[in-house]
Image (cartoon, rainbow over all chains, first blue to last red):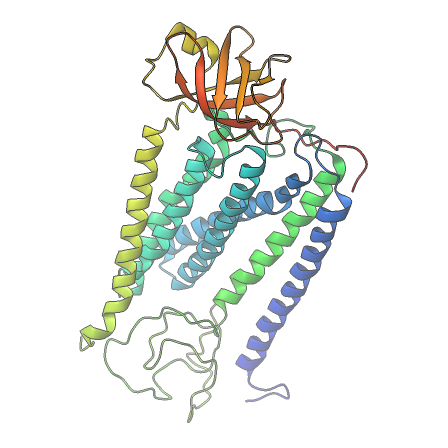
Length: 283
Length: 142
């Protein structure tokens, strides 16, 4: 059955890895360009000075977090509709990326706030809602672990994640709905001509693309079989047999029941017999 | 189900712990937010003058620093006096504490934290600068 390029699944794995590598290079290139632009091309702010350049990390990280949580929401809902555990995997990876992004947002925002506002933290609605969003999404990730049954865990995570997502619009509109120290949005606002210098806007766009590419890479990397995955434990101690477990499809869902460790090795088990039927090409 | 119960423990424990921490953190954020006035983050000069809070209540006052009203009472910036306005009424502020950030200036918005004393002077210990959503170039690029 092997073609000149090798087993079809290995081809698939190499294709996925190659895509990840390309995305990594893209993210790196955009990131490098964004960094150079942020430091050298974008002008200093008239009010805030050079510390305003933290915006080129803070804002892209925030928007990336919103996008990641949206992906997690959609995948979680898609799981609830079809009970396809692939979407639970996607939701988990997306929520992880989102949590990292919001963490960066808060950390960089704190440094920026101390320099410009005068405080590392304050209990204004934007900061509190962002922190609640972070905590809620961490909760959705933790909720998945509560159940040994992958479907129960997935359902719980999808429900908590859906509730937590309501904090995304709350966070975004917090500066409009309530009084806050954090200023209103400059770009994601109804104003058709955002009050931002064009060079700053261009730099910001570049950095947003860099962050999104980087987040995309991180998302795919988390889904790759070389990552330790939270798999279902076997319900019985069945030995790995050629006829039992799924054959060498490296992008198979994490929930494939198989005996052994919970780190998908990506290697073909010894004695594996290649069979087209049951080849899990999902994920 | 012949699963070894010992093998299930760490994952569920992690999940329960994570969820508990998240729950406590969320609750904590909401409680402290409520206590620290998140929903009414600051009051305006008109509001505090119309409905004076007791001098024991720690509140935030926000508005614009009246141009020309800013005076440093010592050289280190730790004692300042200025007036805050919302366009209608003004409150005199005496700030005593850490020096405000470099962005603090007359004509810009600020939020101060402290108490409104009986004599009508707001005694603050924290000055936070509130900047607008505008990002303008300071001049030529760096």
